[in-house]
Amino acid sequence: MPSFLTFPEHFLWGAATAAYQIEGAWQADGKGESIWDRFAHTPGKTRNGDTGDVACDHYHRWPDDIRLMQSLGLRAYRFSIAWTRILPQGRGAINQAGLDFYSRLVDSLLAAGIEPGVTLYHWDLPQALQDQGGWANRDTAAAFVEYADVVSRRLGDRVKLWITHNEPAVVAWLGHSNGEHAPGINDVATAAAVSHHLLLSHGWAMPVLRQNSPDAEAGITLNINWTAPASRSAADLDFARNVDGRWVRWFLDPLYGRCYPADVTADLEAEGAFPHGVLSFVQPGDYVAIATPTDFLGVNYYNRVIVRSPAVAEADNLPPTVIPAPHDLDHWSEMGWETYPDGLFATLARVAFEYQAPRIYITENGASYADGPDADGRVHDARRLAYVRQHLVAAWRAIQAGVPLAGYFAWSLLDNFEWAHGYAQRFGLTWVNYETQERIVKDSGLWYGQAARAGGFAPA
Ligand code: FCB
Image (cartoon, rainbow, N blue to C red; front, side, top):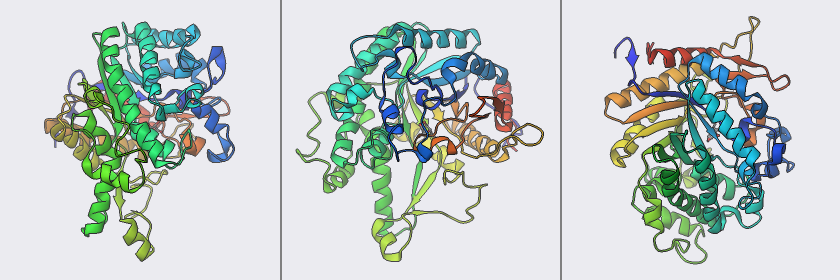
């Protein structure tokens, strides 16, 4: 390996955030209630009852946050739009103040030399739409297209990177099948219908984005971690197939024109996911819409998951996922996620060569460590720095292997509200003091900024 890894000239060195995780101001300037407002306000749903009511107060501090990115030398910023700021009731009346907020943000980013990348849906559905069935209701896909139209009409002249959805698998399975996320539903049949309507809304929105933002790239972001079987036993191999199938192939396959995978359909049928008939929610034309060509695939990659079949685990009284030794914080983040950079290489190769994704962005990658300021006032987060560097090495190797990787967005610009974990998990390149809203760029952020400016870095 060379002593300095040079990345392609136009590689986007960025950082990512999501509206509910950083903005706060949950009722400001005409914003409507979202399912995450409702969920976090429901006792027992998040750690310590934490909410995004204030979060990083980015809604008011965004000029400082842009200056911070500029000081680091970042070339791109991926953020999401809160649907409820634009259409407080989900559809119908438009709230100009919400559009103005994002329009100012985009203008200021461009003035700072930072490319804005917009995620339309990062999990905060308007509660008014949830009250009509949410994503289980096919009509919500139509509402999403209206929302995408309103936003892209206003921002489409300046935004050149559009992401329809962030991690539809997490929305479907964590939100509707095990209730860990908003809207907190535990029903596999609902979750299966939700997954389809999310994909459908993506496909339907693509032509609208193209029309309103003709010079932009548009695509979708999936969470693709690396699933490995705990042993070579038939049971473990089959379970790894099942897990990867429902979390990854169930979404990738239809997006790339292969319809839903038959093996996963059978798994879900056995679980009672299709009470009205197998895949009864698929209507004529849906598969074609979902497979509308995109310009890129966004990949969120964090870790490897080693799985045991539930039957084996139960019989041997073992946990369903394996935690390989040594279980130390150099190889594990505080989320309990294993650091496994080779999985990023393998994942990029998989989507590039098996699915022929024409271009790929790593739209999230990062690690949770609690390190805060030392006596010197700096945050020496050596483990996060190592994590980011190792994953960028894997990304560089993938590019050498022919993967059309065009950018990397660190998760996250700031420590923020980590969903059901509340403020306990810190993923930021920047440390946030939630009492004072002070920001301190961590060592990892300083290192990453240097790499961004130099267009590469020394691997060791
Ligand atoms: C991803 C989410 C993101 C953040 C990271 C840690 O699944 O897209 O919002 O929570 O995990």
